[in-house]
Image (cartoon, rainbow, N blue to C red):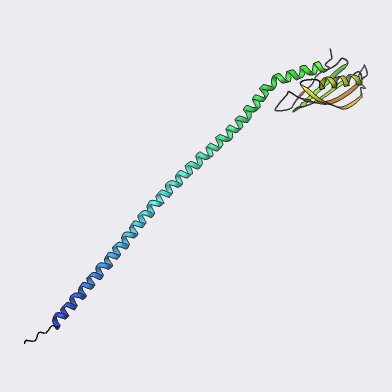
Length: 196
């Protein structure tokens, strides 16, 4: 039987396997490098896209903030205009009421009482005048109490009038203006309003 030497074949097979292993390792390393580079490129693309979206959103947010500031300014203007309109409406409503109040004051003044000044602050009236006697002042206060446009008369000061030719007493009394709703206070001066 002839003897066959298999050693060179095994050596050749080992070399082939080594070469195949190195080729596979190089291919795997190349594939890993290509995969990592592709991943890095994809990640940088995603990052750049997200950064551009963020920049766009920031610009839009700045625009919306400016619009919100404009809206808030418009709302503040609207609130101020509403307040002005309310004041104008109150003044419009109170125009006839002040006429009624003055008419009621004239009707309430009894004979022998002269008013020198009337001052109104919000709903409070301060009335100064001269009366021939204290009973006339009491009658005036009763008339105010029974009036539909005035209420709660309070006598503040009564003193004898030094400069009055007829004598009598000067007085100061306060009362509430019931039907009057004014947004600001006013002062009215009545010069010697005589009673009927």
